[in-house]
Image 1: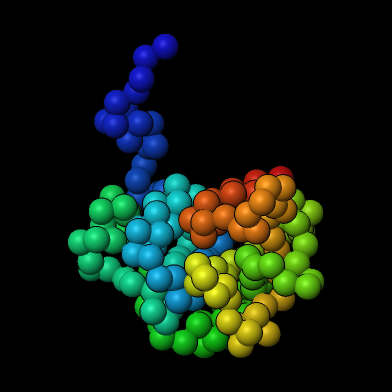
Image 2: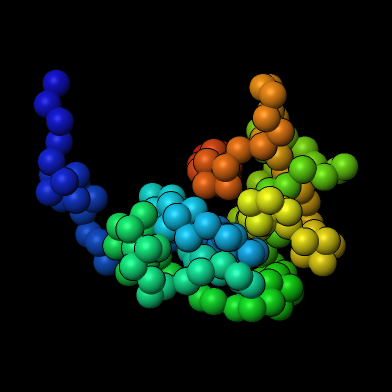
Length: 175
């Protein structure tokens, strides 16, 4: 076994132009994410999953910021993103284009991310690390999904949660 170099891994991806023009039809809407390091990590996860776009809303930090780049590791240059103060405007716009809006949140109607019927195009909404997704945004969502928690903790870090959910959504919509 030999570890592959960064150059080898990059070369295996093939045509970079094709990668950035054939994105998965999934957007992420970040509402009031307070940790700039979480935002950077979400950029990396979005890049790994080749998502269509990130919408950074409310207090969510956005490029250019050196502290964000520290965890994003140049992915802010490749992942399309927009900043908007009000996430409800983005959600209404995406809904009018046929996007399914999914809250990654623990609600009285949430279902397991494993059992959900994902369909593209979709937008997954992530909320503040402490307070979660606002009620105004939840009211606009088509569904809520959650990751079942078996331990003492009731939730995962927002970055970990979107990584788990995002790759399940991609797997399900491609099969």
